[in-house]
Length: 312
Image 1 (cartoon, rainbow, N blue to C red):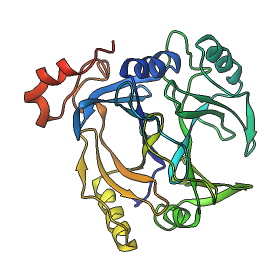
Image 2 (tube, one colour):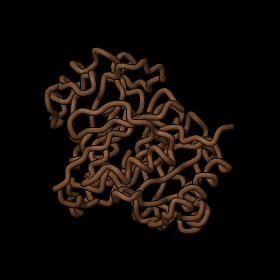
Image 3 (tube, rainbow, N blue to C red):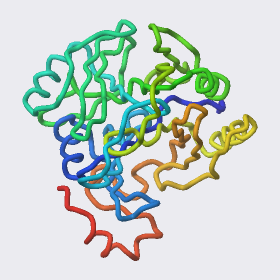
Image 4 (tube, rainbow, N blue to C red):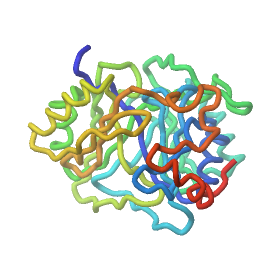
């Protein structure tokens, strides 16, 4: 198997109220709630995973809901500032009406790179976009009673990073990850990999005078890129070390194995494996229904469950 980055694996953001976050993404946006666990580094905080039916790489949006009253994040340079979801052509009218119904803040549809898109904010102020991709997206959507396949999200289309200077970050994408510059519109530079058909795009927005952003409520914590297995993961660890960047040892996240490093522009990047997947500790039918804990916290289950708020 080739040593390739296979587009986006998951994106992790920070939220406030856990119940509100769960309701927005599972009910209003219609994603499947695929895993209810805890932050492995802070077991007093939930870690939620939303995605398609099985939690395919390239569809997984995850959250650390830190609770009400936490500091609000500030959009700026050195951070991921927009999450783009692919949706079927002609579905934006449905989403506008749905956002009206549920009082979701949104902008009227616009266009960039020949693709129609709709920008909206989640309840914590996280900026997302629904994009009618000009390339065919045959990924199978997760359907709910109110959000059918004809309009449902298919997974990620792109992630946008805001930077004072795109060159050092672009070098990571092109020299290490195998991305290529495919388009440019003023100060937005579009990079993509041809290793996968979807979740393949990273947009870099260059704003030389933009103040540094602050990662807190309503902002992206890190962006994870996908590799097929552990062997390829460690190949990239070597490449990044040789490039002169500091990178963590391999970390077992139960559902995938990870490496973390901060790219030169300041965004926290992760590289994550496809293996072993989300059915490693519960069946496909049961995904998201039970609180799953890593082995090191199982003995503290009663205390952890008593501390966490009930969400469903």
